[in-house]
Image 1 (cartoon, rainbow, N blue to C red):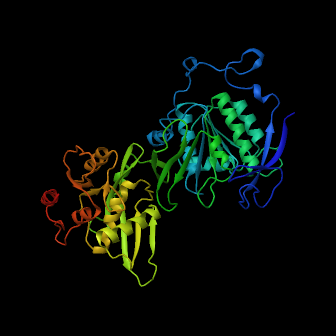
Image 2 (tube, rainbow, N blue to C red):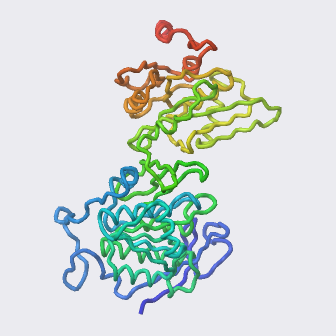
Length: 478
């Protein structure tokens, strides 16, 4: 018989206690102890997937003799999904997908399971939240009718594991891990012990049989996957489906991937027929751009190996408040405060009495510092009520002294901009000179120089004088 015991583990320091306490005695954190059931199988130390030697013990194997057959990646639902997974779905892997309610997690996995059933093999879709009739209605609405897709509605994980063993599908989807439960555990579904033990059972089955699995995870109000943090450590891949519920675009972003990079992002559009992949997201994000309005600039950001052009909007408004408002949507707030300080100190813009709002169009979240220059120029454009040049893209990280720092993969960024019809670019002078055909390249050293170069007068001419002449004068001064 398996032996179990209940312990209480602190989510901050990891210490174990035999009973629940309001305050962790080791780190002093309040309400951080959570229940966890430890289960010890008899003879568990002798089990393993390697070769068995004398005495039934698992033996080490030379690396060059380890077989790799049967682990070819499986194509799944077009290029966008496969890019985020690292090139395809690895057999025996467990993928956890989280996202806000109503964002499209079930829709995405229904399409993925149907696509897998059409092309590769039997897919088993298990729902603990919906009946099989509800699954059928959703599939009919999206036009999905695969012959080899099985649906199963059950909340007992023991029954689910039995069905997987009987049907032997090539793909399993469990929606969701917080709503299934093991009958041997006394805690309710969604508790720490249920989620942890359920994920471990599914992971063990996936590794032993080679069946890839998708798990749907609920999220908290802070946006993190609900349940113990150890859940994300158990699975192989963790993906987040992001976006605004009332906008049509969704971003699938990887935050953990044992088989590939976590820098990739997939772009999808929510339609009546489900999620449709967007092959050229830069063109989509710039489709409704108002180029003649002050406060609008174009940044070139990298999402993994893909350059994306996005519109950065800024608005400044006079205020009598002693503490002006600073609001950002899709851009880091701390970095926005830094850029405002640099514009005030190094460029001379009196922003102390201005409310400042920054928005990244399309629901995209920019995390890399290469978008600093576009945000700063958009703020300066709105404050001076002067538009940014229509055919200009901006790339560069801004330092505290107002200097522009070099940016990686500059040639790929500007090459993507040239394909979309942009003819001018401003980039840091410290970067290597990129080779881009059909684009006028302007090197600048400081954010003040970039602001003067990027803004136009009312007649459409550059606000600053000729860049080449100004650069020559700067070199003479040196």
